[in-house]
Length: 82
Image 1: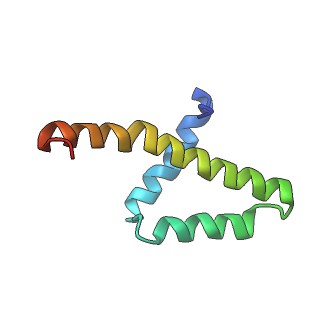
Image 2: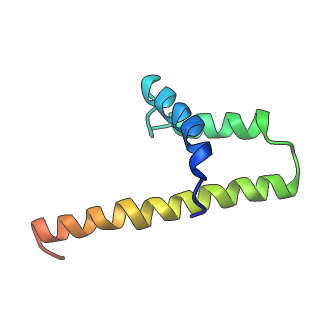
């Protein structure tokens, strides 16, 4: 995952806080936000859409690697393997 430089994080974290305060959930809200951003704020081009999809795919991979896998490993320890 390309890490965001320290001087950008403060501004980006404000967006995350605003989303939390707005009660954004992962049951459709996040999908709606990402789609609206893409529809209205991404300049239409193959390259821009390709880059957006690449960012989403890499975010999914990072979530899997750093959040989901450790969670699953913890549950295997708690409940035993299959």
